Length: 222
Length: 225
Image (cartoon, rainbow over all chains, first blue to last red):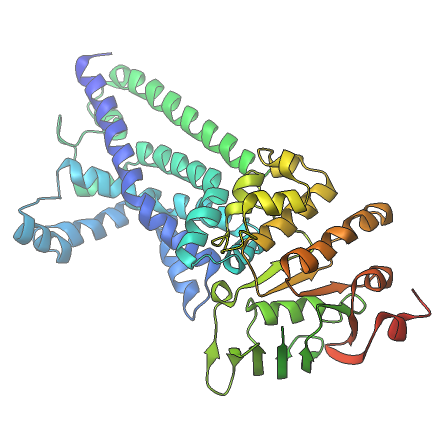
């Protein structure tokens, strides 16, 4: 593999890890809310969270482009307040990966929280714990394996992300080029053989991540 | 201890729990068949369920009053609760379970970990994983954990239902120690009349959410016990 190909691999690993870290706090919070609280319109939030799984990724990319572009609602704030550009930068790669992998994290963590016996939380309350301590000492540790499994699956999904990333980040060599984008570009240029090593690396990393995600998830249900 | 439930009402799918009663004996037994509303009653007292109507008072304080929207949270009620499945936290060892809700020991040092562990005879189990304990050991750890939170009242929901009769008899003295050593009043729920005769000062019969009888174990269950 060429040096440039290795750079693409490391860039993909870094941005996928950042995507996963970015969604962890929000994903855990929303998963807990969905698992433990009821309110009118809960189904709307549940559906919104799942949308990226079913909406065409390029459509999600277009939404992100409109949101984070220089004239977009969020893009303008980030540019005016912090001087940060998102679109066609590594930040766009991270955000696209985060949005596309968010449902996997939430679904896995939600199931993990639902599987925590509510009796443990109730008894913790009768033992003097407030809601924050119940979460920190009971719910979160007992759901921990499921959350880790969800995070690993989200990481794998971010690694394979293509459609939304292509729209919002482009395919800029050494700036936004991920494994998926590089494979696509090589095929487009007729360099199929150059795409093969990236294909193998991609399959190996995603296989490892999904395998461990499943193992951890299975362990949490024992 | 004086626990008062005044016209407390909670609608359940099959029937309504309706209680208007005072509990003021050291160990009160609640007896009734499965599905009579026994666990629901304990959840109402502990604050884990909210009644539709009525008032709940413990000693001089109001725990719940539907008319004034007072509803003291479970963590502030200082009412211990040992559920049927004991709910020992599986990710914590025995020691961590015991100190989870521990309050300051007080001037007489009554509620220290060492004292509670000694009285419940679990000193040698402190570093064990709770999932490796026998049924009887788990019961005593659950009792000790509840004791260490220095409750004003302890609710026990069929805590011995999974044990055979020989083990149950061995655990009765430990329950009496909670009353005699720590001076904690108990409300003890069961559907086994034999447990009541050896433990309780007073028994209430519960049927479909309503108290249908009240008296000493001999008066109420004499023929059965």
